[in-house]
Image (cartoon, rainbow, N blue to C red; front, side, top):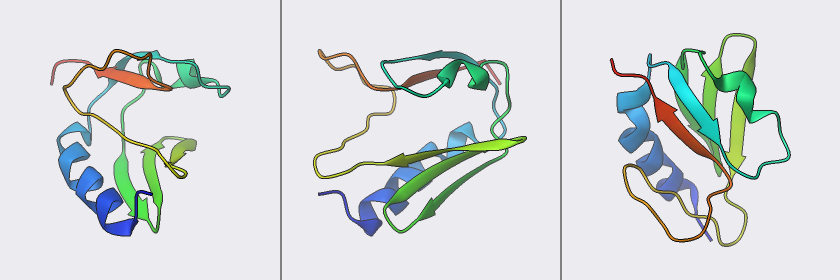
Length: 89
């Protein structure tokens, strides 16, 4: 199970996306992930086992549950629950 230190490492790896605009959002989430399109990431935070992307007016909270995983700039065969592509900075 991903623990707090794993989430802190993810936050550090994702720091390059702070201040960037989401160009594309895709995945099989039950949430309205399209509202992130065209929005700037204002902050990237971690809190316990939660990973947060903060936007103006809302935050995306990710909890990796028991078997969650993430990838930055890597592809996987199975469709991801959430995939974000950033606009060039």
